[in-house]
Length: 279
Image (cartoon, rainbow, N blue to C red; front, side, top):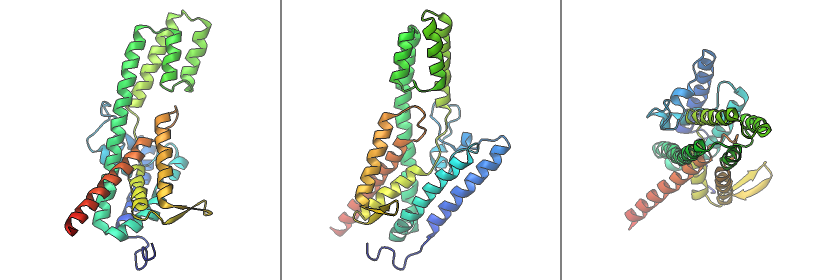
């Protein structure tokens, strides 16, 4: 890694323009949001069964961040993604050139969207089947089992239904209430938008660790760790968090892993092509 940055641009054009575009989109999202227009409904990534899903969203979602309703969280999301893009992306763009880096970045972002949609499809299919079974026998015991199995037991409305139902386990009203709120929750999930450049950025992080495995990164500016181990730790955390799938976790962990997966596949394809040319 001795000459990795020598004579290179501190802010090469693709990284610079990606940072500008993402920042401008946050500003536009905020301004339109104050006018009653939620840009995430149009450009954020939705489940394909949602009426809000559009074919362009796997591409456009990677230029959106957070929500106009939560400025601090949105700015935090944007800052960490853009900081990581600048920190690792500029090295890759200088190493590969602008065209290859942009192609790589977009493929990782699209791959992240594909993996996220695939996991969503499996999750929702499982949830829909379980809900159909529950509606055939909506008892308090079955309700407790349902919300536990699908990580809903910490959601306030489901806690409230459980608390009231416990006072009268045979209540038909509470049985119907449970069906209503589960159905409402599922509709909210279907229409929830996924936004952010994180999938593409995780692909960039993976590529850096793959190409420069022994480069030292410093956690909290103090603890040195080789890039290959940092990438491994990040991937393990994302996998654990994705499988755990706790309620209230609004991070698209499998999108992050999808960005890494497509980064690996693309790097292997490029590596094999280079090897074949040499042979």
